[in-house]
Length: 264
Image (cartoon, rainbow, N blue to C red; front, side, top):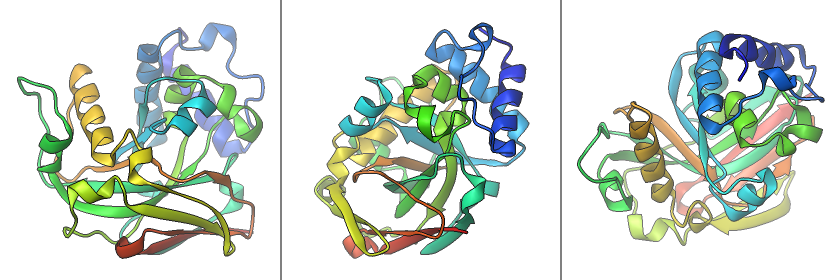
């Protein structure tokens, strides 16, 4: 694979210059495996300069896995500098994004660590560590640009911080039933036109299944989730590209409504 520091620099430069890598990385620089991608991602996180505040998990729905050509989820990092926390609405300049796809997701804030243990984590064991449940929006972005990011492949996207762009965390609650989340309905609208709806089951059958997957994956890589970490668990509705001047609104029912605007 290519030098992780060099790859991270090229990916960040493409994003910051708003000049997509339409031909992808040079063959000599591309990751050869998911492990290569994560090595490059670690260099990306270091070069980004923002403070990591948690994780995003990608490809947790059948629709997302089919679109990205992968059979497994993968993760990236959330940063303080590209997140809006505990608010019902946020706006970013459209010019900040090469992709600008928006995804309504269930997110959690952890109240306890999830360290290595004798048996793998499952839905029930991670649920005990969840401090609050939140409606959230992730804005997808990628150095590969809108036309090419979905065909880049999982390893390349992992290197590109799992195509993370920005994150809105809605107000949280401790008042939720773990059993009910899978069937909980979420609707997505753009400028009041309904795009579609889905349920928490679209994220690996349950958002806490995603959390368990991440906890186990990080342990396998010599890391672990910590109290205070935020984790957003993947899109639960159809996704949509947001254009300059448009507003996306997600209705999470009893968990509230949140909105994100790409300003001109």
